[in-house]
Amino acid sequence: MDWKAVTPHRALLGEGPFWDGAEQALYWVDIAAKQALRFKEGGLRVWHLPEHVSAFIPTVRGDALVTLSSGVYRLDLESPADAPQLQLLCVADPHPGNRANEARCDEQGRLWLGTMQNNIGPHGEDLPVVQRSGGLFRVDANAQVTPLLQGLGIPNTLIWSDQSATLHFADSLDGTLNRHAVAADGSLGPAQAWLGQHPRGGPDGSALDAEGCLWNARWDGSCLLRLTPDGEVDQVIELPVSRPTSCVFGGEDLQTLYVTSAASPQAHGLDGAVLAVRVSVAGTVCTRFVG
Image (cartoon, rainbow, N blue to C red):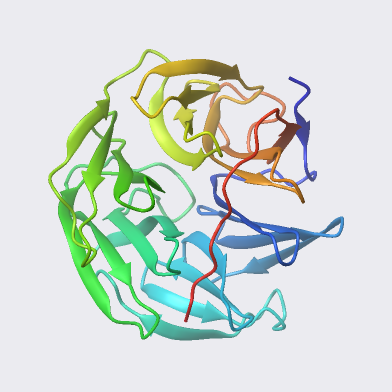
């Protein structure tokens, strides 16, 4: 595959890619550098935030959500990049010492947010995860917070399938991808093992294609795994980065695959870049926050 870097920007910890079809714009974050980024019409804009940020998701009313360590905030996209205007929407996880990690909106436009013990030091250095203090929360349009899971290590991958009846969810501390049945009221059934540990790195973020296959970024594995609905490895997609973190389908036909990545000790030339390549299958759409 002919992978290309979307911009010259290199992240310390790139994450959370979101493709907005209405704008034809790519949103993502650099968690460790406290940056929210948008690439639109060939131009890159970077907002510098006061805290670590794990997701940057546009809303139906025209601003965006950013998931910071202290809570979920609205970001005025017209505000200056070096002085962003933030308004607190809610505090999903009040546990001291936790930070936001994986976040994505379901088909109804509700935000699902996974949190974890903060593992980033004051200078962007890695800190060990020594406690399972994280949780999974749902934030509705009116900012009501519903706790869904607790005792999580490193939550990653939030993908719904089967007309939103199934949630694919990973805890990277365990190295596993699980499935949960989603009840009509939004509650989750018990975790069902879907993909166990794999020699090509640990599970990070994912995207779903139109054929029902899940593309999972493999931290320290330099690849994506394309997984069938049964959890079988259909394809290993090699990448020119050491630590891919997540992926999303974009472009007008949803056949451009974007992959975020992080810096690594191996120091490959494209580590930290957002990569793009054309693929033969279309992806599924990202949903804006409905509030």
